[in-house]
Length: 405
Image 1 (spheres, rainbow, N blue to C red):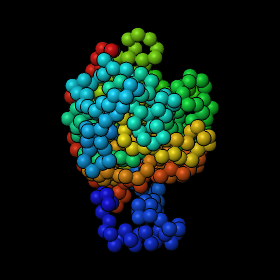
Image 2 (image 1 turned 45 degrees about the horizontal axis):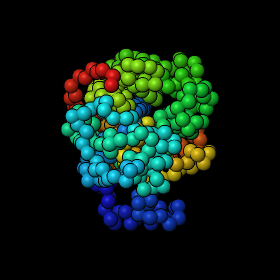
Image 3 (image 1 turned 90 degrees about the vertical axis):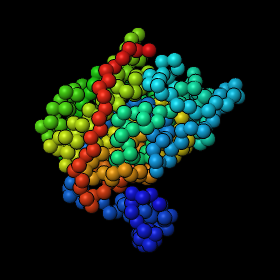
Image 4 (image 1 turned 45 degrees about the vertical axis):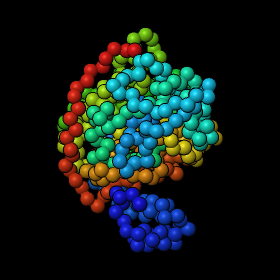
């Protein structure tokens, strides 16, 4: 049993009996999840008034956090076969923090299915132009921020990207609860979003962008809520965070011309991950020192796995189109809040729509699509029985963006 839930076997049996009576026969694991779900406080009394979401780019759980004690992670000792039938071992990447000598691993809709291989999760060296970079990993000491923060806060080791596909479809899920494309297509979106739901209830929502805004895919519809990073840090300092804030990093815009890849600190290859770690530390420092901190939840996650290896086969989820049902591989996800368990690993099944479920639960909003309607509420991972305001200092050296590959 996971230590963070602190239930005895007797309590678990009792919970299972109660849950079974309420919802039919459940396994012990499902009974435990049912208990956590039904024991959530009334949303208005949860103590959380601000939800901040930071979504980085293209790293899998095993690749970044497979070393974390208590988590279902694997790094060293795995072996994968390439297209020529040769076996290769997983290997540490540091002190290479950028991967310039390697290809950007395939994370397309089709390439992902080669990697997935009907649940075998062994096609990492057979998808697209993938090379040994795709089966490399970083350890605790290689990650200046995550190496310190992950062991101190709540990590979700069963949190999956929403769809077995690339960045755009996955980022659509965290805004709209569904996608309207399976590739990174630059065409106008018309899907309703969480920003519409918030506006309808006269709640405040703000999207803080780096070098470009993902919301531009909706044309100028959300220009009024789109701000720059400087505004985010100012809002933290003054305690004037909105009810819901999404903070996107500056993207590694490798598809817009030579030299463009040196502008990002989003962890997308071939960005230097030390720049991404420094960005996350700045967000963490701003949130935990804000006057709004006592009432805030910070969620740090990644949009998709980026073609890097992970040993856990992603389950399917309900959706509006069979093409969208297959979730993508696990991504690193941290929960940071006065209500977050310290040094804990939560094993419940989540994906990006669990963030929407949390927002909808807290602010009384209707679901956007089938997936968020059925999602596990990310609030289930929190401990509302106590509030601990002390936040450990996470010191990360400043790292400026280096040269493009």
